[in-house]
Structure formats: C-alpha cells, structure tokens
Image 1 (cartoon, rainbow, N blue to C red):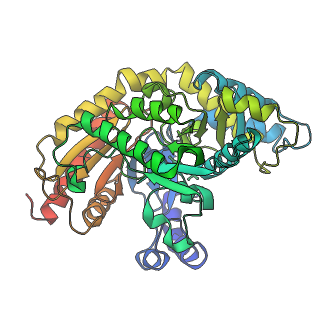
Image 2 (cartoon, helix red, strand yellow):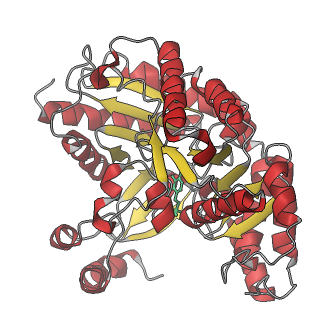
Length: 465
Ligand SMILES: Cc1ncc(COP(=O)(O)O)c(C=O)c1O
C-alpha cells in the first residue's frame, strides 16, 4: 500500500471511482455521492484508519464480526497457506478437503448437543435461506407437506435474500422488493423497553416476557400449529435494535414451540462465537435448537463463510434421505475460508477469549456502560450482554418516549462519533456497540469516553444540556 501522503492524494480519485461505479448496501447512493465516501485503508487491533489518516475505534467490530480484531497474522497465515496449497475445490463430486472437514468436526464440539452435521455457505443470508429450504425438506420427508409457514418476529433481522428478507421483521426491508413472499408470518418481539409506548403500560420485565410468549402462542393457535414449520429467532435481536429478551421469554417460547411441534431455528449470526460470553447464545439461554445458522465471528470476518448446523432430529432425516440433496453453492466449504475459520476458532479457544467475555471483559464493559450513562438526560436504557450493548436515546426518560422523527437523533450522534474517531452504529435512535473480543479494559475506557462525548454533543445539539 502506498504511503500516507500518497493515500491522501488518491482519496479524491477513489471517491470519484466509487461515485461512478459502486452501489453501496443500505445506502442512498445519490446522497452518499454528494457527501463523499470515507475510504478505509487498514486496521490494527480495535482500530481502523481512513485514507485521510484519521484513526477510528471500531466499536462495531466491522459489522459485528471482527472477534479477533484487525491485523491478526495467524489468521492471515492460515489463509495464505490454504491459498498456496488448494485455493479452491468444491464438494460436489464426492470430494472434500482437509480444512472443511476439520472445521465441521471442530464446530460439532462447540455447538449445542446433537449438532453434528453441518452445511456451509458464504453469508448469514445464504445460511438462513438454506435453513428455510432444509426445514421445508424435513417436513416434506416427514410426510407433513402442510407444515410450510415460517414464523419469525417483529424487528428481527435475518438477511437480504428473498427468503431471509421475508423472514426479517424489520418492515422497511420489504416494500422495495414486494416482500414478504407468501408463507412468512410474524410474532411480536420481546422489546420490553418499548412496551410502555406500545400500550402495555408499566409492566415488569418478567411479566412482559410471559405476555409476549403468550401472544406468540395465541398467534400460533390463530394460524394453526399444523401449518407452522418453524420459529426463527435471534436469541438476542441485533439489527432490529439490540433487544435482550426478559429472562422469562425463552423458557416459555421453548416450551411452546415444543408443544406444537414447530422446529426451532436459532439465528446465531451475531450472537455466536463468544460475542455474549458463551460459544453461542443458545448455550446461555439453555435452548435446544433443531437448526442453527452462524456466520460473522466464525472467521472473525477475515473470510466470507457461514454454516447451518442440524440437530439430531433434522440431521438424521436429511442424512438418511434416499435421494440427492439438490442444494449447494460453488463456494460452500471454500478451503481458504474454512482454514481461516478453523484457525479463528482455535485461537478463540486457545486464548480463552470466550471465557474472558463471560467472566471479565464482558462484565467490565457492561458495568462501565451503566455507570457512565446512569442518569444521563438523553439515555433511556443501557442494555446488553458480554460485548454487545445498546444505548437507547429518548426524548423523555420517564415516559420512555422516543423522539417523534425516528432515527434523526441517532444519525446526529453517529455523525459526531465518526468526527470524534469512533464507529458506533445507530439503529433508529439506539446506539449500538459490539467491539472486537480482544479489546482491553484500557481500550474500553477510551471507547466509552468517546461514546460519552458524542452523546453529550448530541444532547447539546438538542439543547438538552
Ligand atoms: C442475525 C443476523 N442474521 C443474518 C444476517 C445476514 O448476514 P449477511 O449480511 O452475512 O448475509 C445478519 C447480518 O447482520 C444478522 O445480524
């Protein structure tokens, strides 16, 4: 890569090329092109640098994926070795490769009990799309072709393919594409902080968890349980606003889906690989999913790779089928991505990083967040677990009342963050943090000092302090 001066000289050139040729995800192209894009050129640890020489703390670990942070040489070497040895081969022709089988076997040791069969894909969306196909196939094999509906939740995010977007409950994801497709139904989200505004009154968290579970059961009965194939859920909702469910919610939901013979699909794309202090959130909540999807932290984002794991119930049926499984991607189980993911899991294990999130750095992060923002005039709630957290900004704390123009204040705050060297994501008016798992206490202090400054600046803009 060229030197710093050179980079900065080339920034305008890259901006022009980007504006002319590159359509960005989840971005208003025209507005971005007027504003000018930021060119990110390198990263180290929890930091990234842009081509103008600004250093930012990446408080979002990329898109919740850089478990090991930037610049990890062991991951780079693992990728390089696989690239130099077998840059590509597929699994279609009765063939496999050492990295992919070892990765599948390694995953089986950290997944919930019984999840010993794995299919690979390249993104969270693809994994979820695959999961829905496998769910349909399972019920077809079981002679229950009427079990076809996929139940998921309001404010859920499961990706952007036609099926994954249909499964998602963030409604603005639908109209541009005439979604959802038929066959997708929704249950309410266990979003306790928003409960008062949604008309539930001043309900205690535990009571609210029961209430949402009961409403989910009512919805299942209204639709007809014999028609419902699966219930898909992120154990902790991420992109829909970082919703940590009340403690009463998951035990009830697990009971209900079992009662009505509905397959439980845990989407652990964000919550997997140590993010919340367990290998998977299913461990934390004691869930026994029939099928699970994972991506992101699986390779610390160093390579695109995702997976679907099958519990015994589905795995036995699908593996014993007397016909070809008509599914697979050119890059399913890519050797280089598999090698990097395998090394990534080995490092997480060897360095005790998952236990560290559970026992030390996670609790430190959570308690400092709560200390720093306790009583802040703009902050309604701080919530989170392990190294994932949300700071919900509200107009009125007592009423838990959001700002009238949803998302405006979040954007102001996010822009302050960028200007002050911090990447903190705004989901509507909720600020979200999910730093790399390697973050130190000292770095957490630096990150939170910036977050506080930016929320103070936002309050000042709103004339709230
Ligand atoms: C819970 C969840 N599922 C699925 C996805 C989609 O993953 P991808 O963007 O890799 O397709 C995401 C992405 O953020 C996610 O948060």
